[in-house]
Image (cartoon, rainbow, N blue to C red):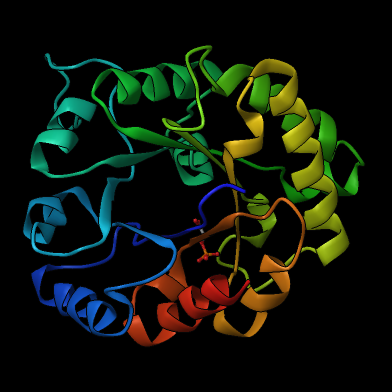
Length: 243
Ligand code: PGA
């Protein structure tokens, strides 16, 4: 069984004063039986050095350095204290036109910097309603995951675009269908696919976490809104510990 992972994605939220939430989380889960990852904005990464939790970036450039104003490289994230980075989050794909090929290049940049890539995939509402979810997932998996992926350097996050920040969650059967499908697709390419962690993301809360974590092949969650406050993230972590 892969080691379970509760990941929080703060997105473009949080200033130094908000780091108190990590302290509160540490008081409750400093000794958690699952891995805990926080992805704050890049400006806060170096301020997280005292936390016991893993820290991740939310994006990285494909290059190590160079003339790319405003961008942050995987090497810089590692230097600031990160051990993970999200790649291909749907907001990056939508807001910045990131293709599967770019996501694969960013994931490879993460590996080169010694970071674990959390590679995000998921269908839109139109794709779900059009019945093409699994083929969309197949295309994203094939195009976004570098050949060098292993269970050590890669986590997959399945996040239906229509479930992110909307309060809408797929049925447990729908989550189970996609996660089992992802596991099978990974097994076709990677020897250690059974150990690769597959997270569910999209409107995970304390009230639905236990049910979601009961679905086979769900190895944890990528949590947006409910990761900003320790009081909201804590029940999700507890549910994962008990799953
Ligand atoms: P949400 O975001 O939990 O606020 O739906 C999830 C994500 O975008 O990772």
